[in-house]
Image: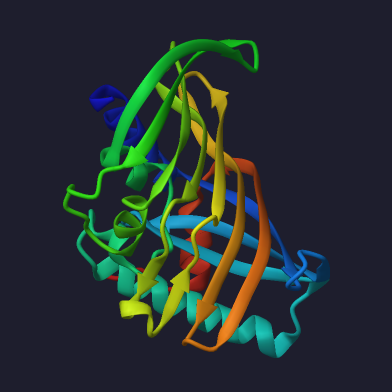
Length: 245
């Protein structure tokens, strides 16, 4: 597991060299689990000092208006300038934006090892629970201590191919005053081999039941697909924000 954690950290570092396109579909559910409405958002994603920055380019299949595009550019520019000044290595503490495999692995207590075939490759599967006694850094790791599930590891590359988990207890943010993620909320992460020992996140699903500000109940199915990975061109960054000394 230490080796797998090291490989995942390396993959997280390599993301700095890539940009990709992300499509997120959000189903709003009623109390019976029926879909009331679905919204889609498309973003171009890149990383600065480990911080994830996602620029909205389409909403519900339509390009942004001129005003919305200008507001989004100003928002992203502000994030870039802030993140370029921030020390690397602290990205996972900001707003929970980077919650993912890298934050869950160090908090796992694993059991029931077995070898299976996944996508035609030899894969090691483990059941796990979050370790409540492990020190957490930031919101994402605090949440990871309250989940349980299964992780699949590509045996040759020592990379996480898939992770399924669900909250086995309610996770309260701000003591429950800001929000509460209810027990039973589940998530799926998938990473795919894109090249020689290069793995990138490609699919995420979250089935969320929560409450905001003690008042509003939230029931959502969120489906995220990442694609079109390519080397990051620093010129893209300079178009949004000037270089910071």
